[in-house]
Image 1 (cartoon, rainbow, N blue to C red):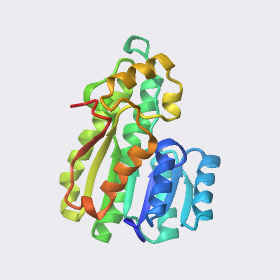
Image 2: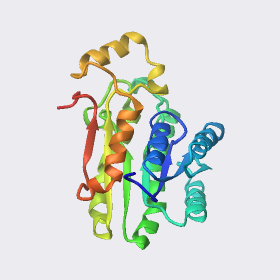
Image 3: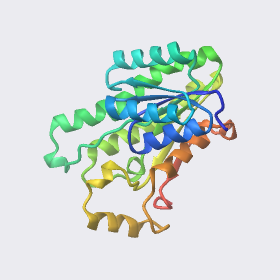
Image 4: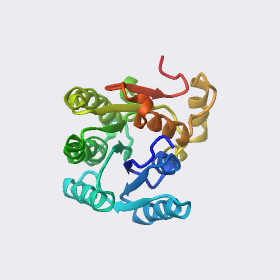
Length: 246
């Protein structure tokens, strides 16, 4: 029970990596705030946690909307009185080659993947400062490290998340708050389910471990960074990619 009694907000907590993280954190003793744009799926995750004997709250949120984010934080504090962990996991893709990418596709991804991380951290950081500490974990990507064809917007946001992570680690570290990022490689989620089988096979071939990752692989990385074992890890970018990026 590595997170016994701690309160964790997990954005994008209704599906994929966020869903597995919600379940894993609950099994490790955390009180989980499942924050997601998808009300039906989010409520189902929270209900399943409660049915297993855990404590969970679903709160609807569009992380790109600062007012909704503030309402999410208020709901978490009203229910659990504190916030110990924030996992900025919510993210979207709107892929296209640069020459074909519409301004709307760019703005949608920037608003969720980059501004959303800013909004959530800005809203939660004062709570953690007042409490005397906390853990902030951001979802980056190997794409933010080496780029990827057809993902100008996504790569830009993930590179930006890495920059914000390292900046906040310096700003918030003296307040007892660690800020780290996880950079997944090719993970089997609903996002990759839309990728052609031939492309998935190529991704698998490029990965030294010879397989694609699972949401639980990433969730365990989040768990480590949220735990006491990572108390002296700050400003790190942990690659969970099967060795794809040396």
